[in-house]
Length: 85
Image (tube, rainbow, N blue to C red; front, side, top):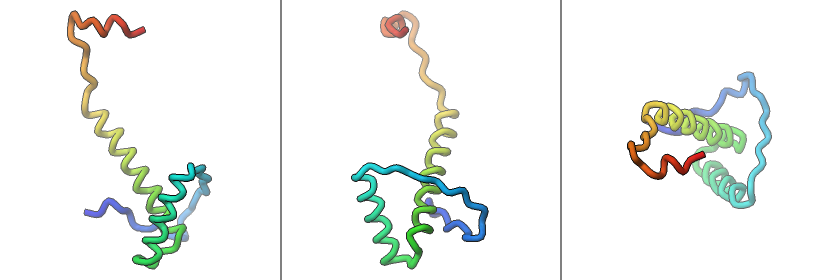
């Protein structure tokens, strides 16, 4: 199973999104785009769409997992529980 989704259909109803990147993030994105240009034949927009979708899916999975794993409750008599506001 590939974690990388298929490119979005260009005829799909698309909402433009602006993303502000830090210089290190922009450099990382450029490395990924260059690799995909050289090896997949996809254009930069298709690769960026795939990266966004992959990140969105990862965030959704993290939310689903966190909903399944209950937060630990402090033990009775735990002195750290009294320190919380």
